[in-house]
Length: 491
Ligand code: AMP
Ligand code: MG
Image (cartoon, rainbow, N blue to C red; front, side):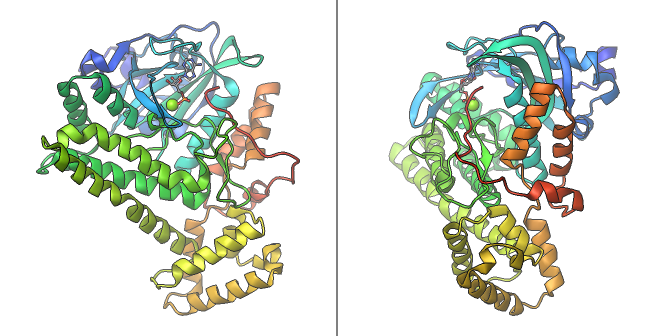
Protein backbone atom coordinates (compact mmCIF):
# COMPACT_ATOMS: atom_id res chain seq x y z
CA UNK A 1 0.00 0.00 0.00
CA UNK A 2 1.28 3.49 -0.77
CA UNK A 3 1.09 6.04 1.98
CA UNK A 4 1.82 9.71 1.85
CA UNK A 5 4.38 11.14 4.22
CA UNK A 6 1.91 12.71 6.60
CA UNK A 7 -0.14 9.61 7.08
CA UNK A 8 2.83 7.42 7.97
CA UNK A 9 3.98 10.23 10.21
CA UNK A 10 0.70 10.09 12.13
CA UNK A 11 0.75 6.33 12.15
CA UNK A 12 -2.37 5.66 10.12
CA UNK A 13 -2.26 2.40 8.24
CA UNK A 14 -5.71 1.92 6.80
CA UNK A 15 -7.14 -0.96 4.90
CA UNK A 16 -10.79 -0.92 3.88
CA UNK A 17 -11.94 -4.49 3.60
CA UNK A 18 -15.54 -3.63 4.49
CA UNK A 19 -15.65 -1.15 1.61
CA UNK A 20 -14.74 -4.00 -0.72
CA UNK A 21 -18.04 -5.73 0.10
CA UNK A 22 -20.91 -5.09 -2.35
CA UNK A 23 -22.29 -1.55 -2.03
CA UNK A 24 -25.48 -3.10 -0.73
CA UNK A 25 -23.78 -3.17 2.67
CA UNK A 26 -23.02 0.55 3.02
CA UNK A 27 -23.31 4.08 1.72
CA UNK A 28 -20.28 6.18 0.97
CA UNK A 29 -20.52 9.01 3.44
CA UNK A 30 -18.07 11.68 4.53
CA UNK A 31 -18.29 13.05 8.04
CA UNK A 32 -19.96 16.49 8.08
CA UNK A 33 -17.35 19.11 9.07
CA UNK A 34 -17.88 20.85 12.42
CA UNK A 35 -17.38 24.48 13.42
CA UNK A 36 -14.65 24.46 15.98
CA UNK A 37 -13.28 21.11 17.12
CA UNK A 38 -11.38 20.72 20.37
CA UNK A 39 -9.75 17.49 21.49
CA UNK A 40 -10.84 16.84 25.06
CA UNK A 41 -9.76 13.21 25.52
CA UNK A 42 -7.17 11.08 23.77
CA UNK A 43 -6.56 7.52 24.91
CA UNK A 44 -2.78 7.30 24.90
CA UNK A 45 -2.33 3.61 25.58
CA UNK A 46 -4.90 2.66 22.96
CA UNK A 47 -3.33 5.07 20.45
CA UNK A 48 0.04 3.42 21.02
CA UNK A 49 -1.47 -0.05 20.62
CA UNK A 50 -2.95 1.10 17.31
CA UNK A 51 0.43 2.37 16.14
CA UNK A 52 -0.61 6.03 16.16
CA UNK A 53 1.69 8.94 16.89
CA UNK A 54 0.40 10.55 20.09
CA UNK A 55 2.43 13.77 19.86
CA UNK A 56 1.17 14.46 16.37
CA UNK A 57 -2.42 13.68 17.24
CA UNK A 58 -2.54 15.77 20.39
CA UNK A 59 -3.93 19.25 19.93
CA UNK A 60 -5.23 20.80 16.75
CA UNK A 61 -4.29 18.05 14.33
CA UNK A 62 -6.02 15.42 16.45
CA UNK A 63 -9.04 17.68 16.87
CA UNK A 64 -9.40 18.07 13.09
CA UNK A 65 -9.06 14.34 12.45
CA UNK A 66 -11.21 13.05 15.30
CA UNK A 67 -13.91 15.58 14.39
CA UNK A 68 -13.98 14.36 10.80
CA UNK A 69 -12.87 17.74 9.42
CA UNK A 70 -9.74 16.16 7.98
CA UNK A 71 -9.68 12.62 6.67
CA UNK A 72 -6.67 10.49 7.47
CA UNK A 73 -4.88 9.30 4.34
CA UNK A 74 -6.21 5.94 3.24
CA UNK A 75 -9.64 6.39 4.86
CA UNK A 76 -12.75 5.40 2.93
CA UNK A 77 -15.57 6.86 4.98
CA UNK A 78 -18.86 5.01 4.88
CA UNK A 79 -22.03 4.44 6.85
CA UNK A 80 -22.88 0.78 7.42
CA UNK A 81 -26.29 -0.64 6.64
CA UNK A 82 -27.96 -2.91 9.16
CA UNK A 83 -31.33 -3.85 10.54
CA UNK A 84 -32.36 -5.05 13.96
CA UNK A 85 -34.99 -6.07 16.43
CA UNK A 86 -35.52 -3.14 18.76
CA UNK A 87 -37.44 -4.28 21.84
CA UNK A 88 -38.57 -7.24 19.78
CA UNK A 89 -39.67 -5.27 16.70
CA UNK A 90 -37.81 -5.71 13.42
CA UNK A 91 -36.79 -2.57 11.57
CA UNK A 92 -34.24 -1.09 9.13
CA UNK A 93 -31.52 0.86 10.92
CA UNK A 94 -27.91 1.55 9.82
CA UNK A 95 -25.33 4.05 11.01
CA UNK A 96 -27.51 7.11 11.44
CA UNK A 97 -24.85 9.18 13.12
CA UNK A 98 -21.59 7.37 12.57
CA UNK A 99 -19.07 6.81 9.82
CA UNK A 100 -16.47 4.11 9.54
CA UNK A 101 -13.21 5.70 8.43
CA UNK A 102 -11.56 2.37 7.74
CA UNK A 103 -9.64 -0.39 9.43
CA UNK A 104 -6.39 0.46 11.14
CA UNK A 105 -3.90 -2.38 10.80
CA UNK A 106 -1.67 -2.17 13.87
CA UNK A 107 2.08 -2.79 14.03
CA UNK A 108 1.17 -6.23 15.47
CA UNK A 109 -0.98 -6.93 12.43
CA UNK A 110 -4.31 -6.66 14.23
CA UNK A 111 -7.22 -4.97 12.48
CA UNK A 112 -9.52 -2.44 14.16
CA UNK A 113 -12.42 -0.40 12.82
CA UNK A 114 -12.00 3.31 13.41
CA UNK A 115 -15.44 4.90 13.60
CA UNK A 116 -16.55 8.45 14.29
CA UNK A 117 -19.79 8.55 16.27
CA UNK A 118 -21.77 11.78 16.12
CA UNK A 119 -20.31 12.77 12.75
CA UNK A 120 -23.46 14.01 11.00
CA UNK A 121 -26.39 12.73 9.02
CA UNK A 122 -26.22 9.68 6.75
CA UNK A 123 -28.76 7.97 4.46
CA UNK A 124 -29.78 5.92 7.53
CA UNK A 125 -30.46 8.85 9.86
CA UNK A 126 -34.26 8.75 9.50
CA UNK A 127 -35.47 11.73 11.56
CA UNK A 128 -32.24 12.09 13.55
CA UNK A 129 -29.72 14.94 13.37
CA UNK A 130 -26.70 12.63 13.10
CA UNK A 131 -25.10 14.27 16.07
CA UNK A 132 -24.11 13.31 19.60
CA UNK A 133 -23.71 15.38 22.74
CA UNK A 134 -20.76 15.64 25.08
CA UNK A 135 -22.09 13.98 28.25
CA UNK A 136 -23.05 10.64 26.69
CA UNK A 137 -19.84 10.47 24.62
CA UNK A 138 -17.74 11.02 27.75
CA UNK A 139 -19.85 8.44 29.52
CA UNK A 140 -19.20 5.91 26.75
CA UNK A 141 -15.49 6.67 27.00
CA UNK A 142 -15.43 6.08 30.77
CA UNK A 143 -17.52 2.93 30.82
CA UNK A 144 -16.12 1.22 27.72
CA UNK A 145 -12.56 1.78 28.94
CA UNK A 146 -13.53 0.54 32.43
CA UNK A 147 -15.00 -2.60 30.83
CA UNK A 148 -11.80 -3.18 28.89
CA UNK A 149 -9.73 -2.83 32.06
CA UNK A 150 -12.06 -5.31 33.76
CA UNK A 151 -11.08 -7.80 31.06
CA UNK A 152 -14.44 -7.74 29.29
CA UNK A 153 -14.44 -7.75 25.47
CA UNK A 154 -15.65 -4.37 24.30
CA UNK A 155 -15.40 -1.65 21.72
CA UNK A 156 -12.87 0.92 22.87
CA UNK A 157 -12.79 4.71 22.98
CA UNK A 158 -9.87 6.46 21.34
CA UNK A 159 -10.84 10.12 21.53
CA UNK A 160 -13.56 12.63 22.25
CA UNK A 161 -13.74 16.03 20.57
CA UNK A 162 -16.19 18.81 21.18
CA UNK A 163 -17.54 20.28 17.98
CA UNK A 164 -18.15 23.87 19.00
CA UNK A 165 -21.75 23.40 17.87
CA UNK A 166 -24.85 23.05 19.95
CA UNK A 167 -27.13 20.10 19.52
CA UNK A 168 -30.82 20.23 20.35
CA UNK A 169 -32.04 17.56 22.75
CA UNK A 170 -34.40 18.56 25.58
CA UNK A 171 -32.33 21.74 25.53
CA UNK A 172 -29.27 22.87 23.55
CA UNK A 173 -26.23 20.87 24.60
CA UNK A 174 -22.58 20.90 23.49
CA UNK A 175 -21.97 18.61 20.52
CA UNK A 176 -19.23 15.99 20.56
CA UNK A 177 -17.80 13.14 18.52
CA UNK A 178 -16.41 9.90 19.92
CA UNK A 179 -13.87 7.81 18.04
CA UNK A 180 -14.90 4.22 18.58
CA UNK A 181 -12.53 1.35 17.97
CA UNK A 182 -13.83 -2.16 17.40
CA UNK A 183 -12.62 -5.50 16.05
CA UNK A 184 -15.49 -4.84 13.66
CA UNK A 185 -18.95 -3.35 13.67
CA UNK A 186 -20.54 -6.49 12.23
CA UNK A 187 -23.72 -7.09 14.18
CA UNK A 188 -26.49 -9.65 14.33
CA UNK A 189 -28.39 -6.81 12.64
CA UNK A 190 -25.96 -6.79 9.71
CA UNK A 191 -26.92 -10.40 8.99
CA UNK A 192 -30.60 -9.60 9.46
CA UNK A 193 -30.28 -6.83 6.88
CA UNK A 194 -28.61 -9.19 4.39
CA UNK A 195 -31.14 -11.96 5.00
CA UNK A 196 -34.09 -9.61 4.66
CA UNK A 197 -33.09 -7.44 1.70
CA UNK A 198 -30.01 -8.99 0.12
CA UNK A 199 -29.57 -11.70 -2.48
CA UNK A 200 -28.42 -15.19 -1.42
CA UNK A 201 -24.98 -14.19 -2.73
CA UNK A 202 -24.93 -11.08 -0.52
CA UNK A 203 -25.64 -13.18 2.53
CA UNK A 204 -22.95 -15.68 1.68
CA UNK A 205 -20.47 -12.90 0.93
CA UNK A 206 -21.14 -11.42 4.37
CA UNK A 207 -20.79 -14.78 6.11
CA UNK A 208 -17.54 -15.57 4.28
CA UNK A 209 -16.19 -12.12 5.09
CA UNK A 210 -17.09 -12.57 8.76
CA UNK A 211 -15.39 -15.96 8.90
CA UNK A 212 -12.22 -14.57 7.31
CA UNK A 213 -12.18 -11.61 9.64
CA UNK A 214 -13.18 -13.14 12.98
CA UNK A 215 -13.31 -16.91 12.84
CA UNK A 216 -10.75 -18.12 10.28
CA UNK A 217 -10.43 -21.36 12.27
CA UNK A 218 -13.85 -22.53 10.99
CA UNK A 219 -12.89 -22.08 7.34
CA UNK A 220 -11.91 -25.74 6.98
CA UNK A 221 -15.02 -27.02 8.77
CA UNK A 222 -17.39 -29.29 6.82
CA UNK A 223 -20.23 -26.92 7.60
CA UNK A 224 -18.45 -23.62 8.17
CA UNK A 225 -21.64 -21.60 8.54
CA UNK A 226 -22.94 -23.84 11.31
CA UNK A 227 -19.47 -23.63 12.86
CA UNK A 228 -19.68 -19.82 12.62
CA UNK A 229 -22.99 -19.88 14.46
CA UNK A 230 -21.52 -22.10 17.17
CA UNK A 231 -18.49 -19.84 17.61
CA UNK A 232 -20.64 -16.73 17.95
CA UNK A 233 -22.87 -18.52 20.46
CA UNK A 234 -19.77 -19.44 22.47
CA UNK A 235 -18.36 -15.91 22.34
CA UNK A 236 -21.64 -14.35 23.43
CA UNK A 237 -22.09 -16.88 26.24
CA UNK A 238 -18.67 -15.91 27.56
CA UNK A 239 -19.42 -12.23 27.20
CA UNK A 240 -22.76 -12.30 28.98
CA UNK A 241 -21.26 -14.39 31.81
CA UNK A 242 -18.64 -11.66 32.26
CA UNK A 243 -21.33 -8.98 32.40
CA UNK A 244 -23.29 -10.91 35.02
CA UNK A 245 -20.20 -11.52 37.13
CA UNK A 246 -19.44 -7.78 37.46
CA UNK A 247 -23.07 -6.62 37.67
CA UNK A 248 -23.15 -4.83 34.32
CA UNK A 249 -26.57 -4.04 32.86
CA UNK A 250 -26.30 -3.28 29.13
CA UNK A 251 -29.75 -1.80 28.95
CA UNK A 252 -30.49 -2.01 25.22
CA UNK A 253 -29.73 -5.50 23.95
CA UNK A 254 -31.42 -4.99 20.60
CA UNK A 255 -30.04 -7.28 17.89
CA UNK A 256 -28.26 -4.35 16.23
CA UNK A 257 -26.38 -3.90 19.49
CA UNK A 258 -24.98 -7.44 19.55
CA UNK A 259 -21.66 -7.87 17.78
CA UNK A 260 -20.54 -10.94 15.88
CA UNK A 261 -17.04 -10.55 17.35
CA UNK A 262 -18.39 -10.89 20.90
CA UNK A 263 -17.47 -7.36 21.95
CA UNK A 264 -19.80 -5.26 24.09
CA UNK A 265 -21.14 -2.42 21.95
CA UNK A 266 -23.44 0.56 22.34
CA UNK A 267 -22.94 2.29 25.65
CA UNK A 268 -26.21 4.18 25.86
CA UNK A 269 -28.36 3.28 28.81
CA UNK A 270 -25.93 0.83 30.45
CA UNK A 271 -24.90 1.02 34.10
CA UNK A 272 -23.42 -1.09 36.89
CA UNK A 273 -25.61 -2.31 39.72
CA UNK A 274 -24.90 -0.97 43.16
CA UNK A 275 -27.41 -2.89 45.30
CA UNK A 276 -27.82 -6.48 44.18
CA UNK A 277 -31.23 -6.94 42.62
CA UNK A 278 -31.71 -9.33 39.67
CA UNK A 279 -34.58 -7.16 38.42
CA UNK A 280 -32.34 -4.10 38.02
CA UNK A 281 -33.23 -1.87 35.06
CA UNK A 282 -31.76 1.60 34.51
CA UNK A 283 -33.08 2.56 31.08
CA UNK A 284 -35.84 5.14 31.07
CA UNK A 285 -37.64 3.42 28.19
CA UNK A 286 -37.34 -0.20 29.38
CA UNK A 287 -40.68 -0.11 31.16
CA UNK A 288 -41.27 -3.84 31.22
CA UNK A 289 -37.74 -4.80 32.18
CA UNK A 290 -37.04 -6.68 28.95
CA UNK A 291 -33.34 -5.90 29.38
CA UNK A 292 -33.15 -6.26 33.18
CA UNK A 293 -29.99 -7.78 34.67
CA UNK A 294 -31.49 -11.23 35.13
CA UNK A 295 -32.89 -11.28 31.57
CA UNK A 296 -29.55 -10.71 29.86
CA UNK A 297 -28.73 -14.42 29.30
CA UNK A 298 -32.16 -15.35 27.83
CA UNK A 299 -32.22 -12.18 25.73
CA UNK A 300 -28.78 -13.00 24.35
CA UNK A 301 -30.12 -16.41 23.40
CA UNK A 302 -33.14 -14.82 21.75
CA UNK A 303 -30.86 -12.53 19.75
CA UNK A 304 -28.70 -15.47 18.73
CA UNK A 305 -31.82 -17.25 17.49
CA UNK A 306 -32.40 -14.26 15.19
CA UNK A 307 -28.78 -14.63 14.01
CA UNK A 308 -29.28 -18.37 13.45
CA UNK A 309 -32.39 -17.70 11.34
CA UNK A 310 -30.35 -15.58 8.95
CA UNK A 311 -27.85 -18.41 8.45
CA UNK A 312 -30.39 -21.17 7.74
CA UNK A 313 -30.05 -21.09 3.92
CA UNK A 314 -26.29 -21.39 4.28
CA UNK A 315 -26.37 -24.16 6.89
CA UNK A 316 -28.25 -26.58 4.65
CA UNK A 317 -30.30 -26.64 1.46
CA UNK A 318 -32.70 -28.84 3.36
CA UNK A 319 -34.66 -26.38 5.48
CA UNK A 320 -35.74 -28.94 8.06
CA UNK A 321 -32.18 -30.06 8.55
CA UNK A 322 -30.93 -26.46 8.80
CA UNK A 323 -33.49 -25.70 11.50
CA UNK A 324 -32.62 -28.86 13.40
CA UNK A 325 -28.88 -28.06 13.36
CA UNK A 326 -29.39 -24.43 14.32
CA UNK A 327 -31.73 -25.30 17.17
CA UNK A 328 -29.27 -27.82 18.48
CA UNK A 329 -26.53 -25.18 18.49
CA UNK A 330 -28.78 -22.63 20.19
CA UNK A 331 -29.77 -25.13 22.85
CA UNK A 332 -26.13 -25.19 24.00
CA UNK A 333 -26.15 -21.50 24.83
CA UNK A 334 -27.50 -21.74 28.37
CA UNK A 335 -25.10 -24.55 29.33
CA UNK A 336 -22.15 -22.64 27.88
CA UNK A 337 -23.24 -19.49 29.66
CA UNK A 338 -23.93 -21.26 32.91
CA UNK A 339 -20.61 -23.05 32.99
CA UNK A 340 -18.71 -19.79 32.36
CA UNK A 341 -20.75 -18.06 35.06
CA UNK A 342 -20.18 -20.87 37.56
CA UNK A 343 -16.44 -20.94 36.89
CA UNK A 344 -16.35 -17.16 37.37
CA UNK A 345 -18.37 -17.33 40.59
CA UNK A 346 -16.12 -20.08 41.98
CA UNK A 347 -13.16 -17.80 41.38
CA UNK A 348 -14.96 -14.88 42.99
CA UNK A 349 -15.29 -17.05 46.11
CA UNK A 350 -11.66 -18.14 46.00
CA UNK A 351 -12.23 -21.79 45.16
CA UNK A 352 -9.92 -23.71 42.88
CA UNK A 353 -11.51 -27.13 42.72
CA UNK A 354 -15.14 -28.03 42.09
CA UNK A 355 -17.69 -29.32 44.53
CA UNK A 356 -21.19 -30.21 43.61
CA UNK A 357 -22.66 -27.98 46.31
CA UNK A 358 -20.80 -24.88 45.08
CA UNK A 359 -23.72 -23.59 43.10
CA UNK A 360 -26.03 -23.81 46.10
CA UNK A 361 -23.47 -21.92 48.18
CA UNK A 362 -23.24 -19.19 45.53
CA UNK A 363 -27.00 -18.91 45.19
CA UNK A 364 -27.43 -18.67 48.97
CA UNK A 365 -25.04 -15.73 49.00
CA UNK A 366 -26.89 -14.02 46.16
CA UNK A 367 -30.21 -14.53 47.91
CA UNK A 368 -28.85 -13.05 51.11
CA UNK A 369 -27.49 -10.08 49.17
CA UNK A 370 -30.85 -9.58 47.52
CA UNK A 371 -32.81 -9.94 50.74
CA UNK A 372 -30.56 -7.51 52.60
CA UNK A 373 -30.12 -5.07 49.70
CA UNK A 374 -26.37 -5.51 49.85
CA UNK A 375 -24.01 -3.82 47.44
CA UNK A 376 -22.97 -6.38 44.80
CA UNK A 377 -19.36 -5.29 44.20
CA UNK A 378 -18.64 -4.42 47.79
CA UNK A 379 -19.93 -7.71 49.18
CA UNK A 380 -17.34 -9.56 47.12
CA UNK A 381 -14.78 -6.88 47.96
CA UNK A 382 -15.42 -7.37 51.68
CA UNK A 383 -15.17 -11.15 51.35
CA UNK A 384 -11.90 -10.72 49.44
CA UNK A 385 -10.40 -8.43 52.05
CA UNK A 386 -11.86 -10.52 54.88
CA UNK A 387 -13.75 -7.47 56.05
CA UNK A 388 -17.15 -9.10 56.19
CA UNK A 389 -17.59 -7.88 59.74
CA UNK A 390 -17.50 -4.30 58.45
CA UNK A 391 -20.63 -4.89 56.36
CA UNK A 392 -24.26 -4.72 57.42
CA UNK A 393 -24.72 -8.14 55.92
CA UNK A 394 -22.43 -9.65 58.55
CA UNK A 395 -24.87 -8.56 61.26
CA UNK A 396 -27.34 -11.09 59.89
CA UNK A 397 -27.25 -14.48 61.55
CA UNK A 398 -28.05 -16.13 58.21
CA UNK A 399 -25.03 -14.52 56.63
CA UNK A 400 -22.76 -15.58 59.48
CA UNK A 401 -23.91 -19.14 58.91
CA UNK A 402 -23.25 -18.79 55.22
CA UNK A 403 -19.81 -17.41 55.99
CA UNK A 404 -18.98 -20.44 58.13
CA UNK A 405 -20.10 -22.79 55.37
CA UNK A 406 -17.94 -20.88 52.91
CA UNK A 407 -14.92 -21.02 55.22
CA UNK A 408 -15.43 -24.74 55.65
CA UNK A 409 -15.58 -25.04 51.86
CA UNK A 410 -12.25 -23.20 51.53
CA UNK A 411 -10.71 -25.43 54.19
CA UNK A 412 -11.60 -28.50 52.14
CA UNK A 413 -9.34 -27.44 49.27
CA UNK A 414 -5.59 -27.93 49.33
CA UNK A 415 -4.67 -24.36 48.30
CA UNK A 416 -3.72 -21.95 51.07
CA UNK A 417 -5.88 -19.06 52.24
CA UNK A 418 -3.28 -16.69 50.77
CA UNK A 419 -3.68 -18.25 47.33
CA UNK A 420 -7.42 -18.10 47.69
CA UNK A 421 -7.28 -14.41 48.50
CA UNK A 422 -5.00 -13.78 45.53
CA UNK A 423 -7.50 -15.48 43.24
CA UNK A 424 -10.31 -13.40 44.75
CA UNK A 425 -8.38 -10.17 44.22
CA UNK A 426 -7.93 -11.11 40.58
CA UNK A 427 -11.61 -11.99 40.18
CA UNK A 428 -13.44 -9.36 42.23
CA UNK A 429 -12.99 -5.78 41.10
CA UNK A 430 -12.13 -3.42 43.95
CA UNK A 431 -13.97 -0.74 42.02
CA UNK A 432 -16.45 -0.37 39.19
CA UNK A 433 -17.66 2.82 37.49
CA UNK A 434 -20.15 3.80 40.15
CA UNK A 435 -23.00 5.78 38.71
CA UNK A 436 -22.67 8.63 41.19
CA UNK A 437 -18.93 8.98 40.52
CA UNK A 438 -19.50 8.90 36.76
CA UNK A 439 -22.18 11.59 37.05
CA UNK A 440 -19.93 13.76 39.20
CA UNK A 441 -17.08 13.51 36.68
CA UNK A 442 -19.43 14.29 33.78
CA UNK A 443 -20.89 17.29 35.55
CA UNK A 444 -17.48 18.86 36.19
CA UNK A 445 -16.50 18.30 32.54
CA UNK A 446 -19.79 19.49 31.05
CA UNK A 447 -20.54 22.43 33.29
CA UNK A 448 -17.09 23.72 34.25
CA UNK A 449 -14.94 22.28 31.47
CA UNK A 450 -12.96 20.68 34.30
CA UNK A 451 -11.69 17.26 33.22
CA UNK A 452 -9.67 16.56 36.38
CA UNK A 453 -12.32 14.44 38.15
CA UNK A 454 -12.93 12.49 34.94
CA UNK A 455 -9.25 11.84 34.37
CA UNK A 456 -8.78 10.74 37.99
CA UNK A 457 -11.78 8.43 37.67
CA UNK A 458 -10.43 6.94 34.43
CA UNK A 459 -7.04 6.42 36.06
CA UNK A 460 -8.42 4.44 39.00
CA UNK A 461 -10.82 2.48 36.78
CA UNK A 462 -7.84 1.49 34.67
CA UNK A 463 -6.69 -0.91 37.44
CA UNK A 464 -9.92 -2.35 38.79
CA UNK A 465 -8.19 -5.25 40.52
CA UNK A 466 -5.60 -2.98 42.11
CA UNK A 467 -6.98 -2.75 45.66
CA UNK A 468 -4.89 0.41 46.09
CA UNK A 469 -5.54 2.98 48.83
CA UNK A 470 -6.51 5.74 46.36
CA UNK A 471 -9.31 3.52 45.07
CA UNK A 472 -11.05 3.33 48.42
CA UNK A 473 -13.12 6.46 48.05
CA UNK A 474 -14.28 5.23 44.63
CA UNK A 475 -15.47 1.99 46.17
CA UNK A 476 -18.04 3.73 48.35
CA UNK A 477 -21.61 3.12 47.28
CA UNK A 478 -23.87 6.15 46.73
CA UNK A 479 -25.71 7.82 49.57
CA UNK A 480 -29.27 6.54 49.70
CA UNK A 481 -31.22 8.58 47.17
CA UNK A 482 -34.88 9.31 46.87
CA UNK A 483 -35.25 8.07 43.31
CA UNK A 484 -33.61 5.30 41.27
CA UNK A 485 -30.75 5.98 38.88
CA UNK A 486 -32.08 6.41 35.34
CA UNK A 487 -30.22 6.18 32.03
CA UNK A 488 -31.11 7.24 28.49
CA UNK A 489 -30.64 5.84 24.97
CA UNK A 490 -29.31 7.46 21.84
CA UNK A 491 -28.41 10.89 23.20
P1 AMP B 1 -28.96 3.00 19.22
O1 AMP B 1 -30.11 3.18 20.17
O2 AMP B 1 -27.76 3.83 19.56
O3 AMP B 1 -28.63 1.57 18.99
O4 AMP B 1 -29.43 3.59 17.83
C1 AMP B 1 -30.48 3.06 17.09
C2 AMP B 1 -30.47 3.64 15.70
O5 AMP B 1 -30.73 5.03 15.74
C3 AMP B 1 -29.17 3.47 14.95
O6 AMP B 1 -29.49 3.23 13.61
C4 AMP B 1 -28.51 4.81 15.14
O7 AMP B 1 -27.55 5.10 14.14
C5 AMP B 1 -29.69 5.74 15.07
N1 AMP B 1 -29.48 7.02 15.76
C6 AMP B 1 -29.34 7.23 17.08
N2 AMP B 1 -29.18 8.53 17.35
C7 AMP B 1 -29.23 9.19 16.18
C8 AMP B 1 -29.13 10.56 15.77
N3 AMP B 1 -28.96 11.54 16.66
N4 AMP B 1 -29.25 10.84 14.46
C9 AMP B 1 -29.44 9.88 13.55
N5 AMP B 1 -29.54 8.58 13.86
C10 AMP B 1 -29.43 8.23 15.15
MG1 MG C 1 -26.97 0.78 18.26
